[in-house]
Image (cartoon, rainbow, N blue to C red; front, top):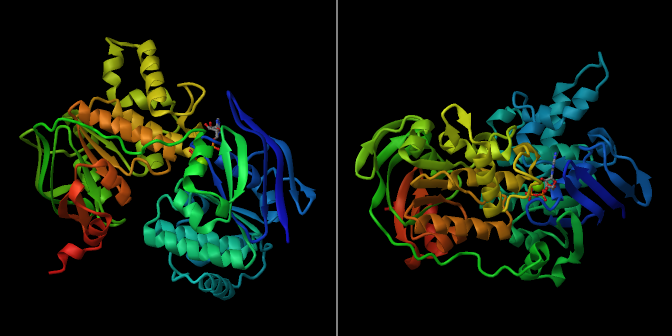
Length: 500
Ligand SMILES: Nc1ncnc2c1ncn2[C@@H]1O[C@H](COP(=O)(O)OP(=O)(O)OP(=O)(O)O)[C@@H](O)[C@H]1O
Ligand SMILES: [Mg+2]
């Protein structure tokens, strides 16, 4: 039975103590959840194990023997493999699945040694089959879905004979089906004796596959627990240091005039005859499964892609939105799903990101009103609860969930009239989620309109007034939220309504 221990780990960044005297241990064949609010230090702790940092205090042990990890190779030698959330960075898109899985083997082959491609393919294929996957090893990685890419990375870890597999928020972008598949694999790896460290903000998942739970709060360990002795409520309290009262706010907004109407809209991304309308003071949901067309419709509304048919009517006036800039000018805001790629400028500061959509209002003639920018940014940081030493911090240095909060904050304060939010709470901790729902509530109280896309039915049911279920690129069904159920949402999401 092997064991991995981290002892007295302290890690600081300029102005931030990310980890303070942290003790953490995993034993063989254990699925261990690492949880905590955004910015608690989960990713940092795991990056230390994975060799992403050279400088930190504390010691690491395997089976009681001290080990040194200061680069990814050290980690690998000790059987530790991490799958980051941004799976793309770890794969070579223009190589095949087989080549990616066998990458280590391929690059470590000595010069002039004959490369046995047939064998490489066969071994990769065996790895994929053993995991119970259905992926063609000859396919290019660039053609895979995100979930398949994750699987390739896990396959590579197995091939490298990893003993400790770290999964940092693997399920955030996955559909329910894909998550199920991932869990099957995790269970199998566990049976084979692998230890899995699992980071997630979805606590039901923790209770589904983890036997141990370690909670981090503000860089310190709150405790390690056996899942069987815990409940979601207790875990939340340990994470946040307070009870979570109520997740969805009761919003009493006055429903006003029609703000946005979409008639028979077709275009990029397979959107086909979508219809919807939203009034001032209303939150409407776009429900549906991954692939139903929610993201594509959001993008089309925001001027990304091309409208081939249909109308977008804003306050009774037909508009043609051809670019996102135009959409902003018309009073639309979009919080996109893929935050790192589209939602924020990671190499800029929080202040720059927050004030960017409304930059003009900070200019007086040729002068930028720096103080005003600072004030607005600090207000946003406070309102949305972004964990950072100051407003000048680069977004790249924030934790995953806090980056998402910047993407949201940037638009919530923009003064737009119609807000299109695409899975805005993905990767956001349960406490901050409630705060974001409150902010959305505030928006509609001010007479704004909100379109909220989510694949989590509980969010649609808790937050919206009406919902459109997207299926196959169209708004397949309109439902009054009060009168619907999770079952009904699922029924229409799965195409139930289109079976004549
Ligand atoms: N490179 C960096 N430079 C400065 N600060 C950093 C850096 N990386 C992380 N931090 C800070 O360290 C703290 C812990 O961040 P970490 O990414 O470990 O949080 P997390 O628990 O993974 O949160 P999330 O759930 O949002 O992913 C945060 O305050 C974060 O801003
Ligand atoms: Mg993280």
